[in-house]
Image 1 (cartoon, rainbow over the protein chains, first blue to last red):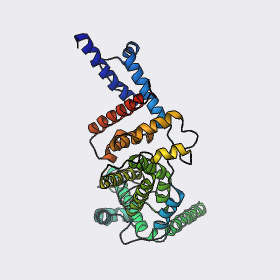
Image 2: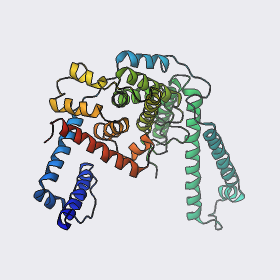
Image 3: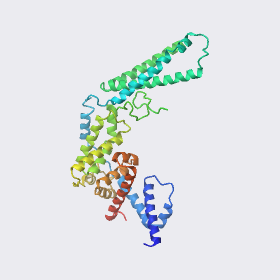
Image 4: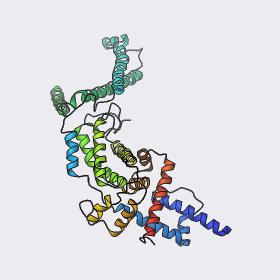
Length: 195
Length: 190
């Protein structure tokens, strides 16, 4: 192959690689071949691009092959409708349950001494402002503890749900939700009365 | 900091789709996932197996396995998980059948019958493309269906087919080229 022909062939190979990348909407940032210019000059690559676009259109026009209704009924009957909950099935892995328990323990270990510390107890009893505790640090600590407690509550909720809610087919979740709504209404009423 | 939109219904504070403590799928989640993905998984299996009956078994088995693993698979990860399971089942079955079997008219039969899966949208070009696709090797069919029909990303495909990204891109390029050549040979493309 002559030097010029060799160069053209190399350009075509690069242009076709670029066409593939453009088809995938993932064009390369830099290339020594300008695709639009090359396509204007090279009929073979232009045809190649049109061919690829036609193939893509044909593939995208292919319909989905529907999963038969009787097959899906069989799936329901062997899963949800059967109501079978084998031991350990669908529950968080044991490692995760241990992790949740460890998180609860850690939160208790961190939170309890802080709540029962002399500084806090005395600060509640004193009438004058506490000079030894920096208010900013105290506020930050309180926020952190609240975050830990929130996370722990979440973890407990999830463990509770995994342990009880699923065998009860979702009834516990609904009851808890209603209790929360009810509690929220009561709190609102109480605050209105207080006002 | 936290991005959950309460997908669990408990005001969970973990990122959506995380599997920490299990974004455990309950019955409703499972039903939703199945209804969303069943046809796509079935289509994928039908094209890879080239046999609609086999595809039905593969899809059913994949869905049952998802139910068994619902404690470790989050709803967000279910799409990729289902396809990967279906892919493994297809490969196992094809290997057991010694690959030699060629039921090339499985999905094609549905297209030409114009039945529920065919329909009027199966144009002449689609039929030609389908015939050429069915004649490709199993791996080529798999990558093309995942990319062009399912519209999955390279990363998802790499996870499903359990191959490195570079190998996957090369496989996709080769598969497209083979498909184009087959169509050119059949006179569909100029």
